[in-house]
Length: 491
Image (cartoon, rainbow, N blue to C red; front, side):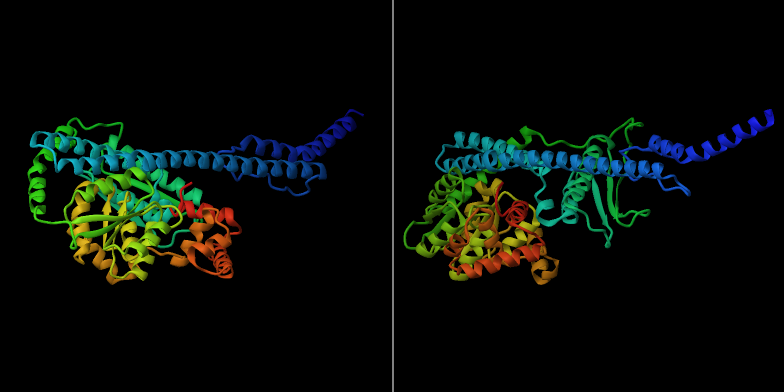
């Protein structure tokens, strides 16, 4: 009797153990799940009971939803963070730096009539304003890299590493795999930010002389990328007993340099004597969407005896209209303007007024903006932070039919690029499609666009369809986002 009872209990235990084995496996899987390392799922077992199968399916479905929600939340946080960064960067660019540009232009205009003692003080003030402007541009670039929006991850990394390599005592290299997988915009942004933070930590703590940034396909997953930032520095745990002391730029050194430039400015002013404003004066059009900058440009240019501002414009369309009306010798155009960018306006002006020279004024020192300006027909490219010193010489140069660039290295680079257009940036849209896209993003109707660009509504509608097809987009909202990323309009 006892043996029968024991056998029965043992048999029931074995049955229960087999019955509960899938459930125990499911509990173990639940314990292993870590949402920070997604991908773990409960797999089906042989002879799995129906109720355990339903429970496993429900658990896996719940994991799918949790991971999707976590990914969506992370993406939303990333977008919110980048939107705030972009807003601050726009404020620095559109408000603070434009005001500093106007200050620099007015200081330069006033320096010509100032007594020697005051001229030296004005020179020091200009040097401080230029220093502040450079710092603000650097902050704006770190907050929201325009190269990433306009040209993609690889050019943005190349620009970042090149800029880092300009630091004293540092050599920087970039190694990019030719066969990278396609990354989403969020993934590109994360890779860029990791590289940016790594380089920032190297600059602060590593005391390195050589840095290498490499981006390649991941060995274990060809659909992922591996970013590696290596340096020959000392690291955080074993600081060098005798760290190298790199020279830091000093404000008083800048001030002395500014003071030292005063005699050269005096010589330039002396050379201007003898120019008489009259029939031979250079007739200028000035276009910028910031009134304070236009005012500073007019003040500086009209202080020159051989120059006369005959027209102003606050956007690209108005610049084109004023150019056709006034037929100036030189058009000075800001890059970023409403309705039509400075580059688009330059292209139209050169097409209709081939004898008019175009000079682009810009906050952007990225080489690709310079390339695009030259492709649009501009003869010169001046950074706003250098406009107080370079603008007058640039106007005279382009009026003589010469090109104006900042140094011989850039001239060589541009000549090489112009000789081999394949090295330039790839633009998926034609110039006309860019014009239509900009106006669509500014909420103009088809009829308004047709009136601005002098096209038929049917042609505008055709361009709209081509834009959606070429860019792989579905509606106007996506077109607006693309136009903001490309810098055609401001958010």
